[in-house]
Length: 130
Image (cartoon, rainbow, N blue to C red; front, side):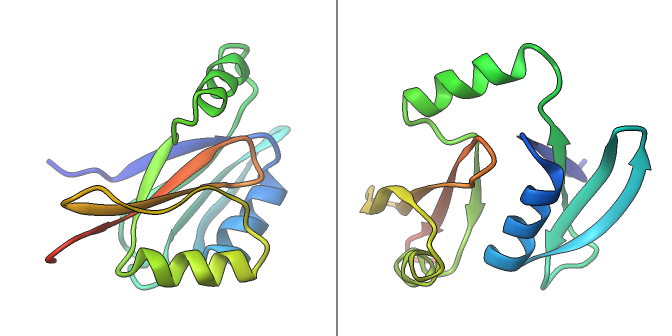
């Protein structure tokens, strides 16, 4: 068994696609119209057949209060692996990304947390010694 698809709720799919591709560097995989929304996924540019991230509309009434509570408590919705958190922090900061947690050494991992501009806090993580 493996993870094939996961999702992140977004308040605007077009804005999310722009951020996740242009700023974060993911590549668009699927874009299928579904009425007022789309089945819109991105993948790591280096892994076009890898796990897809669905940029899922936050239309369900439970989503906004849930995300707001996570953001208020500083809890990231998901985590992305990177080779070098400090380098990604510098690159993304240079592109105007707002971090809520700078690179932080937690012993076996280094993490940082940023605002994805679509309603979520996202963590980037680097396993130490890997």
